[in-house]
Amino acid sequence: MALFPPLFAAIPDPRQANKVFYPQAALFFAGILSFVCRLGARRQITYLLRNTSSRALFRTLFGVDAFPHGDTVEGFFQRVEPDLAQEVVSSLTERLIRQKILSPFRFLGHYYVVAIDGTGMLSFPKRHCPHCLTRKNKGKIQYYHPVLEAKILLPNGFAFSLMTEFIENPEETPDKQDCELKAFYRLADRLKKRFPRLPICLSLDGLYAGGPTFALCERYHWKYMIVLQDDSLPSVNREFSRLSPLTLGNTASERSGPKLSIQRHFEWVNDILYADTQNREHVLSVLECRETKPDRNREIKTTTFRWVTNLSVTEKNVRELHSYGGRIRWKIENEGFNVQKNGGFGLEHAYSRHPTASKIYYLLLQIAHLFIQLLEKSSLLRKAFPKGFGSVKNLSFRILEAWRNVWFPPGAIELLSTRRIQIRFDSS
Image 1 (cartoon, one colour):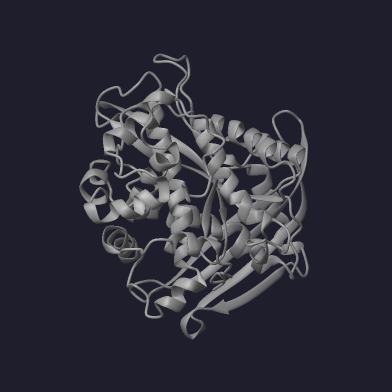
Image 2 (cartoon, rainbow, N blue to C red):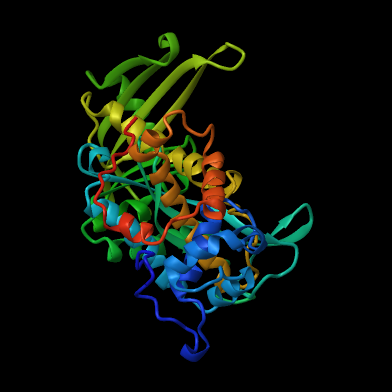
């Protein structure tokens, strides 16, 4: 009997029942395991996961004697509905929320910080499918597929995918190409429908600073912290510059870092009235942080950060707004996209050229990344390996070697699945 959690039970099997050898859970497991072990390519499933010693373990898990071939996995993924696989990703993060695992890390004690940002997924020198976006790069046309991600970010380093919006053209020659802003409005609508009561604070870059985003967040009762660039919202920037020197008590300072070498000075102005191009009025606050610290050459440098928000800024919450609401947005790049691109997951690798299968691989990568993060920061791992592994890549290597070489006696997995254990997560 299959012991793999029924994550995909709600997905109907697209295959003919009389031709099925591998349960669909086994095929999804193969895809997830390849990402957990950071194999980096689909062909590695055949070379590294189908060894003889792991057959008994796979038989115990799924009742079949062989690990599926990479081409078998690919053929199955071509027929899976991406929206159904997306629901599995969303439900995993939702489960963490419902079980209150993420509650200790909530922003201002209430909100979940959701960063939304785009990144490249696939690019090709020739047209990959009718939905490719196009751009010129050094005089040559490049065909590419970006994605827009909504991730819950936590100050201890967790970055869990909440929902994905694939940015793609509806046809080969559209009047206007799809883009990140269009995808943002689609993604926001889907997020509100899927998580109607989730207290969200969006953490966004300067692309989204404007009336449409403000109106959307007001309609959905979301909070937001959006980067305010010098050349965006001129009237808001002017009002902040005019009122900031005149507003008494709206300043704070702090020191941190080695030998308290990092100095931050905060200034803010609340209740700035902004009328957008559709004459909708929005009440905004602006928070500015001037950070002074030595650079790599030990020269003192000052950098200014500024955000616009619909939260009221006070001396009591200004530091949390700065670090957890504003600056944390960069974690979607560092702990999110950068790890998935350069940390062995192969986000930009073409695991498939099939437009449907490539989406399934991307969504399974998000599941694998969630599992790895939970494992890496769990108390069980730190207890079993107090000296650690040196790097998370080494952790994936250990998992691969365990899969290939560790033998479980009959009944051991069933016994382990019945034990109740408590797992705590690193909150540093």
